[in-house]
Each structure stands twice: as C-alpha cells, then as structure tokens.
Amino acid sequence: MPNITRLTEAYISEHPSIKDCLKNDLINYSSLSRKLASDAGINIKKNFDAILIACRRFQRKLKKEEVFESRILKILKSSKIEIKNKIIVIVLEKDVHFETLLHIEKEIKKQKEIFRIIESASAITIITTEEFADLIRKNFRNKIIVENSNLAEITIKSPKEIETTPGAYAYLCSLFQENGINIAETLSCWTDTIFLVDEKDAGKVMGLLRF
Image 1 (tube, rainbow, N blue to C red):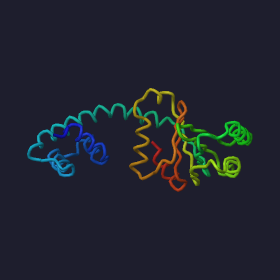
Image 2 (cartoon, rainbow, N blue to C red):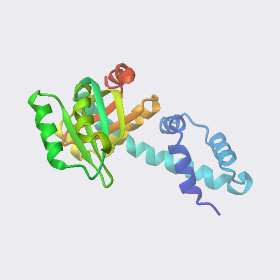
Image 3 (cartoon, rainbow, N blue to C red):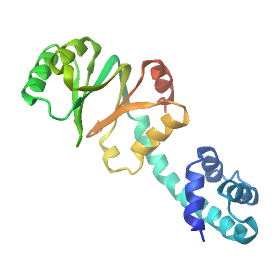
Image 4 (cartoon, helix red, strand yellow):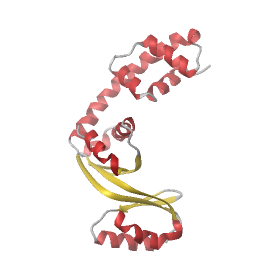
C-alpha cells in the first residue's frame, strides 16, 4: 500500500502551479484528490479520503512556509545584483598540476578579471571570462572534459541575514526553474550567491530579480 501522505506531498511539490494554488486557498480539494489518484495510478475509491486529508495537511504546512518566504523576499529586496557577460566554464580532470592552476589564476587576477575554482571529488571547474579560454586550453589541452561558453554570471549580494534564513537558495532556484531558465553552474560565498546562466537569459533573470 503506498504511503499516501508522502506520495501526495511529492506530487504537489513537483507541480509548482498546484502548490501555489494550494498555498493561496484556490484549490478544490476533491478535484485535486481525483486528479492525483488518476495521475499516480491509485485506486480512488479506496484512497480518496486519505488523499483529501493529506492535501489539507500539506496546505497547512505550506501556510507555515509563508513566514519564511516573507523573510526571504525581504532579504532579496535588500540585495544588490551584479551581472557580467562573456563568461566561460571549463571542467578539468582532477589530476591537473596545481602549480599551473595557481599560475593561471595569478595571470588572470593581475588583469582584475574573475577566476573561480570549484573542486569536486572527480573534477575541477574553472569559471572565468572568455578571453582567457586559450590560456587554459594551452595549459590543460588533454585534461579538458567539457567547455561551456556564452554565459552570464549573476551575483546576488545579500544582507548577512541570508545565512540564517532557511530556503533562500531553494527559492531562487525554483524561481529560475519555473521560468524556464537553466542554471549552468552555481556557487555561494558567505552572503554572495552566484548563478551562471545562458547570456540570452540574462535579461529575463534581471527582470525576475526585481523584487
């Protein structure tokens, strides 16, 4: 027998439009329960009441989330947005020579351009401006896994309260997803949240971030 509560919450969470209507009391619970049962392949006669109750309980949980959402919006309204275009992301194999990386970093920062490194268990990601792509290719020609160019870097500089406010990062990611914007890379450093998106989406992003 399926866990009705878990299934119901997962279904609603995967459908942002339904979630928003539920949060704003714009849902017919009976219709939602029948649709959920139909989409999930659940016997509606046996589980209708359980689904209906689970929907109502999740709506109350969403109402509590609104407190956090108002805090998030207050922080974002106080944030500053910076944008930089002609960004490139190059992913390298993990076993590169670190001295060479440090040399490249020194060269790029000497020209006061951005140079960011993200190190994972299996690769190293370099984020910089497109003008330095040839320099990186020259030094790591056989170590490049993938390149992603024509990107824009969106930096959100927020008040320090963002560090202690649950859901701020998730709120931003959901905002991008709901508007069809792919996040190529993302990272954060204290109160700065950084997103890399396709340059063609930069204007749309700036519009979305006018809280």
